[in-house]
Amino acid sequence: MKQIKILMVTLIALTASTAAFSQGKVAVFNMQAAVMQTDAAQKHLQALDSNADFSAMKAKFENLRAELIKLDADAKTNQMTWSNDQKADFKKKVEYKSADLKLSAEKLKSERNVVMQKIMKELGPKTKTVLNQLVTAENIGLVLDSSAAYYATADFDITAKVTEKLNKAQ
Image (tube, rainbow, N blue to C red; front, side):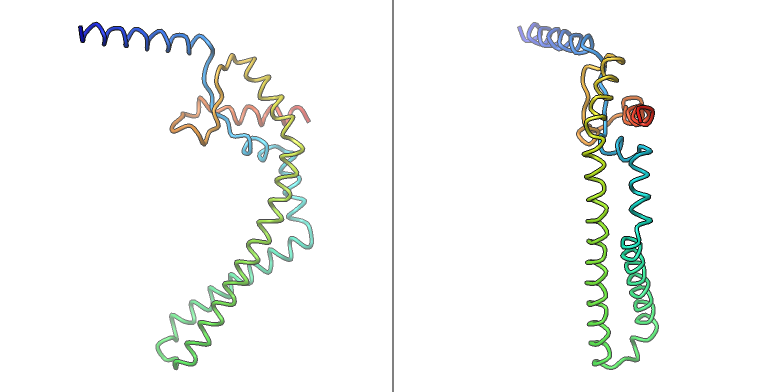
């Protein structure tokens, strides 16, 4: 009796998997990566990088980072000879610079996110159209977000194909 149940479960599983395969193949896709790798998106990001205000923010970030690295090196070299007051002043200076660096990084990230949202808004509908065309052309029955897939080989990833088609469509 137990063997019959196992046989029935096996047959049902085989039938279900056959039905799944007859629906088409499975693919994974990363919409953000597909859009952000397009030529149009790269032009928007290059425009941001060449923007004077954004460049100034990046320069400030890099200067703060360099100052913190220099302060760290100074501390490693001279900290043993510092008085308690000097150590407290140093700690305060590092905390202020670190806070400035963090704020600067947040500003840069915010500016980049604004541009990325603009790109996604602009190219999102085109991407969905291209994806649907690719799904139909390649008889794909299921498309998963690449972050939802536990494992997928590169053969299952259609992100680059969508990016290529988006570049040709523009």
